[in-house]
Image: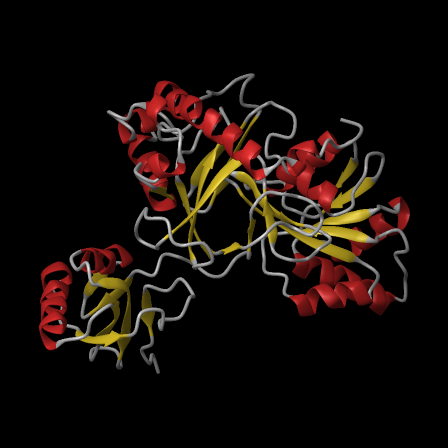
Length: 415
């Protein structure tokens, strides 16, 4: 690829949605046929009938801990736990590992992780040199960026991590157009350059990921001559969303179907409400269907001012797995959801755990359309039935709980 085709980014939402929903049943059928894990998870599902987001929302969510458990259980026969549709050999040039360890395949197609789109949005162009400071061993981060750079027509210096002085020397000698890596390491390199009294006149842009890059750090980069943009990618999915010059949230990639669900469930939340990011990828080699990332985010209303028409998300807003131990027993967000679903008057709930260790107390704040003692007593009984623990229920007005994605808040003192 010598130039980047961005026509997909400018499709009308209706055209994009029609294309995604047409691809969805084919991907589900492919996963059922070629990935044994999904043959089991989606057993009995008629793939041809999954042509809407409402139908997709009825399928189970597979979360990372479940993927790890299946990999561990089947490691002797299939290191990928039945999730990969390709096997060792020409169709799988590389295998990577994430903490767990979870093993991920890399397919052979160009721009396998689809990061060229994010690089292009960050200002990179064909014919440039990119200094890549993501790790090249074990995890796929280095390969994720390199494959996207090659697809865009860029050369790559595989700097990897660490060795700051050698990284700086390579930048001085090679004069790269930009940087890929974590924002914290870019800051270290720029500080080292300032300390050494040297300038990096060619380094004018960056695509950063793997860590938060708050506006204060973005502004610091700009003050040092580097225009840094963020992207959100994972080892399981590849690119999910990317920042544009508008700097208003992250635009979703064209190769994924994204849902925001209530933590601990598979139920989509209302637009703008914070929840867990769930992704269905259209990658045929690693066809993850409703994969729960464990990250919290929310959809932003309206299109990107740059003319890209896909949905935008706010970016990373915390972790969705809020499981906590109370009086020696685990309490899960899914259990809070079970309580909510027992009562049609209840809209939403938030469990707050307080007290000091060995003296835990639970309060369930419940948004309800009606407030009365009988409802309060019934909800307290439901909590005991489901969690085997006691909680004080507080009925609050609909819409009064924070929109932060928290279902369980651990407010205990650990002093």
